[in-house]
Picture (tube, rainbow, N blue to C red):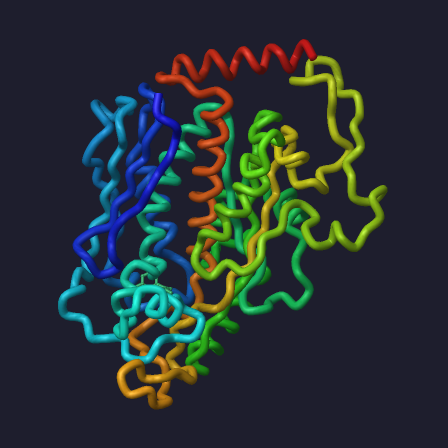
Length: 385
Ligand code: EPS
C-alpha cells in the first residue's frame, strides 16, 4: 500500500494543469460533479479578474478510476487551460514586488520573469482544489466535513469578527449562506462594505488581502503524532496553509491571543461526558482549536489564515528592468483585485489533503473496507476507554 501523497503539475498558460494522488484506498466512489463544484467555487468571488472570465475549470480523470470508483492506483486529474498561450506571451522584464519573479530569477539565473511566474502563478491552485475535493470525499465517508469562510477583506471590518459566533449563528444553514455571498462569507451584513472596498481598490488600481477561517467537524481524536516533531499535525496543517500563495499568517484556535492570556484562560477543561457519548470525556471549551500535542482532540479544528494583497498591481510598483538595470514600474498584464474568497476554497483543499494523509496513516488500508474496519475498531476502543 503506497503512502498517501499528491503532486500538481502545469504552467499557468500551458495546455493543462494536473494533479496525481497516490495511496488512495480502492473502493471509494468519486462524485466528479462535486469536484467541479469546488473548481467553480475557486473561480468565484467578487474582485476576480479577466482570467476567470476565460477559464471554465472542469476535471477530467485520466487514471485510477473505473465505474466511478477508485482502483487503488494513482489517480490523475486534469484541468485544461483555455488561455493556453504560453509560447506567445511577452517577457516579464521588470519583476513584480511581492511575487516570486525576482527571487525565482535569482534562484535559476533567468532574466525573464516569465520562466518563474508560469509555475509560481496561483493558477496552480486549480488542480490542487481538484485533488482536495477527492480528499474531501474520502473524509466525508467517515463523517468529516471541511468548511472555510471569509472573515475580512481589505481590513473590513475594522475589528476582526469572531468566527465562532458567525459559525454558530449560521448553523446548518452555513452552505446556503456562504453560497449566497459574493465573498464566500457568513455575514451578509458585511457584503456591502466588502463590495465598496473592492470597488475602491479597483478604482485606485490597487489590490486587497484578507482573512479566512477553516473549520473541520467530525474528526476522530488522535490523528497526527507527537512522536516525531515533523509528524505533529499542527505543523503539517500550518505548512499546508502556508503552501497557498500569498499566505502570511496562520492561527490555530486562539492563535496569537493565546500568547496574551494566562494559562487558566487558555486551556480547555476536561469534563465527564454524558452517558452514550462517543468517549467518557468532553471539553469545556475549544480554545485549542481541536489540536493538542500535535494531535486532533476530537473537537472541531479551527484554523485562520491571513492573505496579503495580490502583488500584480495595475498602478505599478517600483522595480528594475532585468536587461537594462534601469528603474521602471513592475510589469503588469492583468490580475484580480482580491482573491481571498478563492484562497478560502484552496484552504479547504489543502486542509482536506493534510487530514486525508493523517487519516490514512492511522486507519490506512488497501481498500475502503479495510480502512472502515480500522476506523470502527478505534471507535470501539474509544468507547471502552
Ligand atoms: C489564477 C490565474 C492567473 C491569475 C491569478 C490566479 O491568471 P493570469 O496570470 O493569466 O491572469 O489570474 O494568479 C495570481 C493571483 C498570481 O499571483 O499569480 C487562477 O487560476 O486562480
